[in-house]
Each structure stands twice: as C-alpha cells, then as structure tokens.
Length: 472
Ligand code: UDX
Image: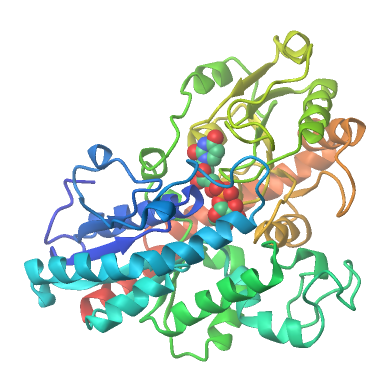
C-alpha cells in the first residue's frame, strides 16, 4: 500500500530492514509482514540473496539491497532440492547461506546504516533461520526481531528438541519409543509428528541456531493467531520465560492480502480462476504440495489414478521438478489426460490464495506447509493431509486431531495407493464427514476474520509490534 506513507499508523517514516530466507514458504510471510509494516508508515528496505531473488519491479515502494554471497551458495534450483535430493540439501544450503552471507551482509548493512543515520532505523526483521544476520546486526548495535514462519507449537518443539534427544525420543531412527507414542511434554504430538529434516545432526544444528536467533533477538513475530493456537502461545510465552516479547500477528496473508502473489517466484497460471468459475460451490479438490516437497514417480502415478478414480473435479499443481528424477515437468501417466479432461486441470503453479478463496473449492490436498495450512483454514477449506518433512507432520496433527478440519490420506509408513486416495478424496469433498470438517473450517475462518479485524487479537498485536519497534 504505497499510499500509506510516512506519518500514518505509527511508523512515522522510520526504516525497517528485512531479510527473508530465500525460500517461497519464507519469502511470502516476510513480504506480507513488510506490507503490513509499510501500511503502518515504515519505510522498507529488503536485503536479499541472488538465489531466489525477489523482483524489485513488483515492489516499487521498497528499496532492495542485494547481498552478494559466494557463488556456490547463490546457485541452486528455483525452489528447493534438486531432483532426487532430499531435504538435507535445503538444510545444508541454509547453514551454508548463513556462513557465506555474514561478511557481505556486514558491509551492506553498515553502508545502509551510515546512509540513513542510525536513529532513522528501527530494527532488522530477519527470518528465524538466519542467526548469522542477527549476529551481524548486533555487531552494529542494531536490534533484530525474528520472524518465525511456522506455528507456535512448532517453535515449542524446537525449544524442546535437546530434551527430546535426552529422553531418547530422537533421533527417530533408533528411538526407544514407538512412532504412535505420545510425546508427554508436547501434546498432542506423537513421536511420528516430530520435526523431520533428514540427518539428525543437521536438524539439531539448524534448530539450535533458530532458538539462539530468538534468544538474541528483541522479539519474536509469529504467523499465527490467538483463536487458532491460544494454549500453544501461552505455553511458548512460558517456555521463553517472559524475557522476549511474542507478537502473534497472523494470519499474515489476511492482513496483507496481495503480498503473497507479488512475491511468488514462479508465475501463477491465472486461467485457474475462470476454470473454477464454471464449477458448483465446494465441488472441486485443489491439490498442491507447496514449493519444496517432491514425490516419487510411483507416487505420482498412484496420486493421478486416485484423483481420476474419485470422480471429483480437481485443480492440481504439478510444479516443475516436483517428481524426483525429473528436472522439468513431470510426465503424467498415459491415459490420465483423456480420462480427466472433462473435470480436471493441471497447472505448474497456481494463484493459491485466490484459488482457496474461490467458492468452487471444496477441499485441499496439501503437504501442510504452515502457509498452506493457515491459508486453507482461513478460507474455510478442509484438508487432506500428506505431510512430507519439517513442521508439516506436526501441522497435519493439529489439522486432524485438534481443529478437526481434515485427515491424513494414508497413515504413517503406509504407501500411497490409488484405492485409498480415491476413498479419501470422496470422504473429504463428497461425504457428510467432509461436510462437517468444512463447517468447522468455516468456524475457524470466522475467528480469523475477527482476530484480524479492528480491535481483534492480531490487529492489537500489530499495534503492539509497531509500538515496540518505535521504542527500539
Ligand atoms: C516451507 C515448508 O515446507 C513449510 O512447512 C514451512 O512452514 C515453510 O517453508 P513450502 O513447502 O513452500 O514451505 O509450503 P508452504 O508453507 O505451504 O508455502 C507455500 C507458499 O506458496 C504458500 O504461501 C502458497 O500460497 C504458495 N503457493 C503454493 C502458490 O502461490 N501457488 C502454488 O501453486 C503453490
């Protein structure tokens, strides 16, 4: 909102510097937050890597400062692990990016601070995975706020990680607990819902660094809202010991609706919306697994024939590189296109917020990335869950067990199989059970609207955040 310039809403034209982690699921919430702060009167400067760099032309209201990082860190596929590479690749990349950015960021930040004068700059808002940038800011006496793009429950899991290792829950391989056992200090998580990021040592290091980033910060910003995670937020505030203010300003996409679309790394296929217009309310299944999750060629085949066999109309995002072993577009199984031409559409990338908002969408088959999960909840769309890694298993647990707005396609350790897929889709979109989940999701949507409305908990949290930033 370029019209909300200096002097409105509390920011009074002071500068906020932001540095997102260059992955889609992290870029979107940071740009949404930047949009909110800009509307409140802050001038925004975005630091970014060349890898997955944002397009400055789409944000003429912001200043962009590239941080040149060592060549091998700035290269990579557009949105995640290359073909066949696991999530380990992303975790290693995040750790390497931290190390490689430290010195160039110090130079760039120093130059920007000299230019603006220190008093004109409120703080750095940095992604929770960028501990090195928090350290750099501290060297220049600039306070940092940390944006964590996952849930409150997810960060409590990060905090508990060392204790879970000590109690033998982790590493999962060789755990003395069974996958279905409840984790006593982290209800409602079971062992199988705990954070999964590939190699144990890498995960441990990444999470410890994320906790250190929050410890060293002047505040924690979370993309969640009170009505969704009230007990989890209370627990997190207790766990943090009251020393670090927590701002639950989500769902960010509702407070800053167009920011997600403008920070998209892939071009969304807008023809989806006209296609949806031709369908009855709540009749279409939207299928998308976010920007990183990959499937095997076998899973693609089972997914395709399961969707076809369900008889339900569908809009399916098949991202380039989504099938392990294929760099570009996946080859759909022979005969699939003919069998589903009348009631299906496959696209490479969708305008997801608009799709979920469309009345024709009756269910979302998702990998349960936190952005997708909150976007779905806030549009009253129930979910079919197929978590892949990281926080997604824990998010799926909340969807199924706490909010009761969806269920897992297949159980842990079970293979994806077309018969099960077919049944699950019909249960979600066509059957009474799914209708009840849709009704509960609709109730959550109402709560999200209340929270983000004038005087709602998230609106007040943004007020508190702005006040805090002005005090820094
Ligand atoms: C990653 C992790 O997977 C996730 O668990 C973590 O919480 C954040 O980082 P990602 O896998 O990309 O994110 O999933 P998600 O969090 O759902 O973010 C994807 C974003 O891309 C969403 O904002 C979604 O609206 C957008 N999107 C996705 C599109 O705009 N179009 C699409 O076709 C698919």
